[in-house]
Image: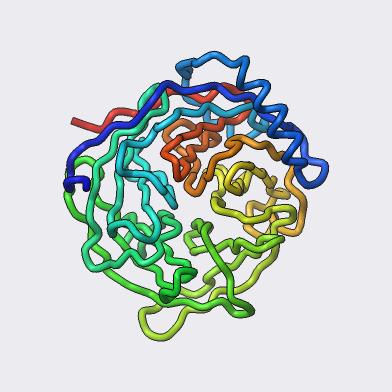
Length: 331
């Protein structure tokens, strides 16, 4: 078991993985994509990914590949179920694990070859019955905080914990300051994906097509919070990750092995991603089980970090080789 506040390091050198499909013209033919990708990977050398952070030009060009680091997460940090990139502490990424694991937050920092160091912070006042996703938001007083979402699929109540964002390099414990219950308005749903948009919590169901729900009212500790169904994401099936790019141009969803990208129609509103097909899809993690991911604004608008239950990490960047690791924490 990890000792609170201690650092742990993962992994092996990364493998650069070409994309499988570049434009979306219907649902993926997975058997064909996987066989093609397997052949390409057999030819790809083990390469340390280097490069500069993307300029602040926003998301423009669809990814052309992914960089994988085998065992990129430290030992005893497998079965990652959610990522949330910090804005208050650039380069830090918060991670949670699902049912059967402690009620801990993991503060990750990635180095140049995709391996992460980790500090573990127990979350006081919270129970991990089935933590599936974590997302960052701004509290009314302007401070940064995290929502940790339980899905309820393991027989537990559907619960959302509010946790003020701790210092990933100095604090040794985090504290849940509020606990909310919620229920869907129309049906029972299995949810493993959530994100923040316009500072409101959004849930994405694991149905086909994926349904998108938003909490339009502030969460309340009294009674049951019910989100509003606002639309569907065409072709997204079995979504385990859903995150918007910081420039609000793209909404990325991921199954256990496939990435889908949706383009905003122009207003920047959440509804402008919905009821349309993705403009790009690719199998980036064949034979793996990705359940955590987020855009990493420390590297620019369009780099995504993913992690699988097997402790592999993946980096997917807009139109080019993913850049190098996390900025160093302040002294």
